[in-house]
Image (cartoon, rainbow, N blue to C red):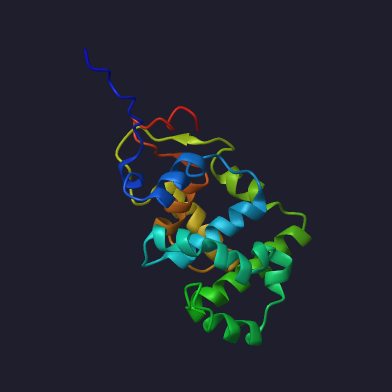
Length: 188
């Protein structure tokens, strides 16, 4: 009698690349409550606009080095010379608009913190302070991603449209969109 092999079922998008598998198995969909980490993920999702997430994952460490490990206070102090330097950095996405959006996003993050507003509480508060368990088809955007997007835009954030925000919500566990047969669905 042949032994059956234990098969791990995961979301189909994570099956074809080892880096995507590791990201899926260890990070994607895990509820994140650290405001700085949420902000970093949002900035990286902004860089992803028009590109694949795998491209960003492959460059993530270069992004972290280029943006001072996404320390908002340090990024907020970056100026034109830093932008010019980053535009020459082949390790990251060299988009002036996205680089400037990240620096501006850091300034907004720092201003919020200086005013006593916690980024994590701000974001999670709009989500009802708990992860949303999606049981239907995976949408490109939702009313909540539209609400969060509008709120972020009102504060001055860029590259935070409702589709980008929804992808970010999935990544940081605000919504659980692991497929029904994925081994991570019940874990997160």
